[in-house]
Image (tube, each protein chain N blue to C red):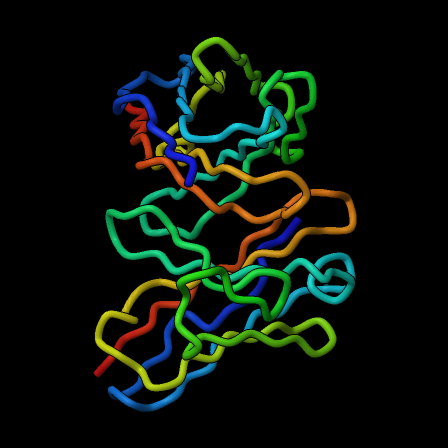
Length: 119
Length: 110
């Protein structure tokens, strides 16, 4: 079972950027995909996008395109997502979730990172 | 892409069965063999309960079952137990290779 550990909570001002990290352990396939999912207070889950472990393959929901970027560090099996131009609507718990190749489902989840956007 | 439509809440007594619906469109649920259900307890990470419409991951109780008809998927939980009380989300892989979640359903075990 793949284990995902996410970075600590963040507090950001409107207009700032945030970097969220997700470190994976316990998998042997180099083709493990990572998804980002968030949950704003009182709302449901929302899929942001997917990234492969090399960072070469990414796909993000249209509403995030243009203000999201990803980096990967294969030596530490860490995937990071930068979200720019934050607004109060970006306040949420952000989860990274792992997908084994071609299964299309999220079998492993990180513990979540709370991002609070407030002035 | 709009969220899939789920009832905001459902409830049942221990031992009873409940069904949660998940309505989408021909661009997602209606055209996808990849519909999933996740259980989400507060302050915990979501947990996969059903994949590919009706398949159960290893370790998931047979009390959980999934189905689909047209643009609507369903999750049925039989023999309700107190620990089943949680939020449940459907999600579908879409025709443009993305994912859309349902609005979420709060299950209360009376």
